[in-house]
Length: 137
Image 1 (cartoon, rainbow, N blue to C red):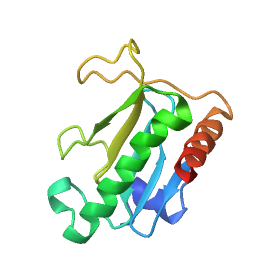
Image 2 (cartoon, one colour):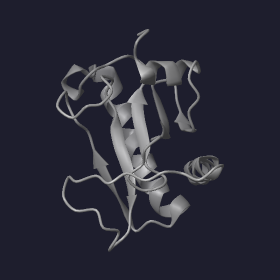
Image 3 (cartoon, rainbow, N blue to C red):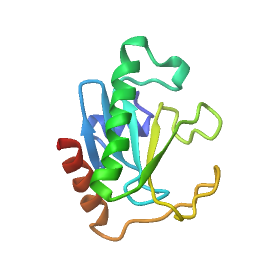
Image 4 (cartoon, rainbow, N blue to C red):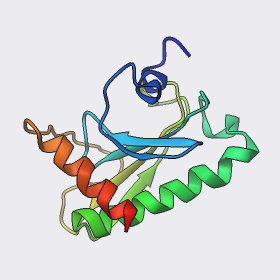
């Protein structure tokens, strides 16, 4: 879809710190992460909400989300992860995306208030590489 930022990242027209690519999904770092390593998982096919996700993408999408959640722990030394999706309301880009956010006890995340942080120069590439390495293990 021409106007979709995530479709542009998937196609390579817009740069993104890609951490996971399969035939069905792409995972890349959120440009405005809750915590560093915060990854967005999207289907390659333009799908707007979870109810729109075709049956043939449901398992690959969830399986990739599981892999990313595990990679937060092994690759970023997180204690766990927060996994979430919005459907229409609070969905800043109209392309289905799963947030996979590294978590540690006492990190300050409370409920659904999502503070945002920024990467220092070159830091996003380092986080992306660490997640890719954990996914390869």
